[in-house]
Every structure is written in structure tokens, then in C-alpha cells.
Image 1 (tube, rainbow, N blue to C red):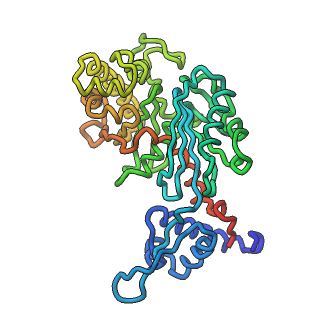
Image 2 (image 1 turned 180 degrees about the vertical axis):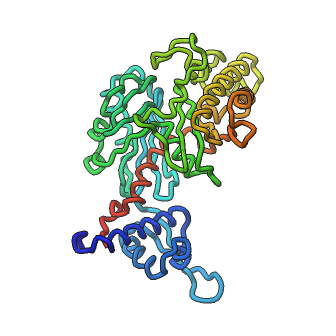
Length: 392
């Protein structure tokens, strides 16, 4: 049946109901009766929506399970061999890739150390494209599309508005360029987003009992923040919201790649922190912290204090109650938070009133690339006809 043969009102209601059912299954499998109760639909409606997806291998109906008197129930879940979304993260010193299923589960992950700072935009994207093609070799599951994360503000059409730590991408149509590196079936489905925003999205879907209003801090060579307000990303008018790393903490401080001086990144960014600690890598820094090396402890404390000053300024503007530390800061959480908390208690107006709470991200360094794939998953659940072409 074509869309034109279905009355608009009927079609719209059916599509809305389909979104409800698929979103609930993504949250947790359930029987037709259970899903009817969770969505407020009738059992017959759930069955009529789910059956075509079972036939197409998108959903799987489990074996009957007795749960008391009456007919045994059969749980509906997404098929373990069903469609997956691709995530790619281009960062300053690495490129990461992921496959994520419709429940948000990480199916596979790969990270390649790449110094993208020495490459042109063409080379950066070509390298990421080659890694992505190699990563997908042998993948038999249907691919829904590609989410691409970058360390910079992203405008309409997948254009990088500004990337202070990877200036080769400034003003580049990275989404269109990356699509040209992909197999034709994927080339029309590339979504681009800032990596800190993607980390926030990934954490909001993976964490238990998530507060819908929070700041997710992405600690890498650059320092970014994803702002979640009522469960939705706040990007700002031009995509610059959450540029925590470029909040000024010392007016006449060190020169920053953004053109300013004394930015948070110049005190709390990964490269600056490693240099201050005398460590060659994050792993070496962690080892130095564990053996109570004075230089390492002092460097982390200084970074925590600068980060706290910047975060207090951000929280005083946006008034969000929770800060989630990801990336490098999650790895150093116990050591970096004392200095950070001291600054927040002193400077954040909401401190002591239920605000400026800290939490460590449960995700590893794959948060942004998982969030990138999650963009595609979210779109598939909101536009379920993309899964099968089913028009009911």
C-alpha cells in the first residue's frame, strides 16, 4: 500500500503509534499485552504494528513464557541480527568508529591513533573514510546510516563552523565530504554533530535514573560541554553553546587556538595537563597519580581548579543542576574533583541549593562515537519507515 492510499489522519496516527511501540521495545522488550499497557494502545493495535516488522526481521518474537494463569506471553525485542547504526568520531589525535543496535547497545568499537592536526581537511576525511570502510568490511547486518562527530561547532548542512583545535576543518562541508567516502547506500545518511554534544546524548541514554538537565564535560585535548535541557540538546543559534574550553579564566593568560587568551583549555586541556605533569601519555599520568607523584598531583589540581572556575561561570548562566565529567576527567575523577568542587562551592550560585552536583560518566572514551551512532538510531525510531519502507 502506498502512502497516498492512506488517509492523512489515519496514516499520521499509525506512524505515531509505531514510534511509541518501537521506542518502548528499544527501552525494554515486552509482550504485546505489556507493550499495550506501556503505550496506552490496545493489544490488537500493538500486534498490527509489530507483525510486519517481525516478518521483515526487524523484530523478534521470543518463545512463550508462562507468567501465571492464562496464555503464555511471547516477548518482542529487536532482532539480534537486525539493523545497526554507524558512528564515526574525528578528534584531534584519533578517529573512532562504532556499531550500535536499535537498543543503543554497542556492537563493536575501534579506535585508531591519528594526528589529524598535521592533515588537511581532505586528508582528515579521507583517512576517516578509509578507516570506516575497513571497519565495515564483513558486516552483514543492514546499515541505517552514519553519525559523524567532530571537535567543533557544527552548522546547517554538516558544515563545521569553527574547530579551534582542528582548524583545517573550519568552514568545511565535512558531512558532504565524508559522504563521498562511503558506499552509495550510506552516502545519503550522514548526520554531523559536535563531539561533546554526542557525549551528552550517549550518557543520557546509557545512565540509570538520568537527570534531564545537565552539563556533560568532554575532556580531551579540547574541552567541550554538551548542554541538556529537559532531555534535549541546547546548541544555541549558531552551534556554539557549550564551548566550555573557551571560557576565559585569566584575562591575560596563555594564547589559545581560538584567538583569545587565558581560556579553560590552556589550563585543563589534555596536552597542557600532560606537559605540566611531565607525563608522556594519559596512561603515564594515571600511573604517576597512583604513586602520588607531586608534579602529577599538582598539575591535576591546577586543571581541576581552572575547570571549576569555567564551570561555575557556565552554571551561573545556564543554571543546570548536574555536571557529568567524561573523557580524561572521568579517568581522573577522584583526583581532579576536590579542587573542582572547591571552586564550584565558592563561585557557582546554585551550589548549596541542589545545584553544581558532580558525577562521573559511566561511559569510557567511546561516549562521543556511541552518541554519533545514536543520532542515526534516534532518527530510525522517530522515522520508522526508514527501517523497512513500511507504510501500513
